[in-house]
Amino acid sequence: MGTIALGELADVVRSKNAGPYEITFDVLFNDYRTYAHVRDHGDLTEQVMASLFRIPLGDIVYCSFFEPAQSFKLTVLRRNSGQGGVGERDTFGCQQHAPLLGLPIPALSTGPDLATGG
Image (cartoon, rainbow, N blue to C red; front, side, top):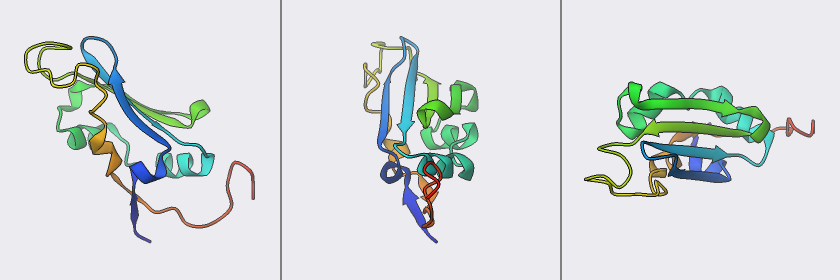
């Protein structure tokens, strides 16, 4: 069956500033079938995210799927001393999502779109 990168399945993968001490990540899907496939596969867990971003599990503030928006959200503590602090490399947090883009997810099988029933 093979795998496909999360960045190819999602319509939007982004990161952004979530205050002086946190960065948040959003993964948005345009169709329910793809969203459900990624959600149900189980690769977007706290443990996987901690490993992917090379952070302690305790640095994850929020990690969950949000059904109404067909999305996944992750919020993590900023490394170092906070926004604009010594060692800060991305004040706006908008360049931190790259590890999510290549995360391998099992390829979708062909079949009906669950949102439309056909």
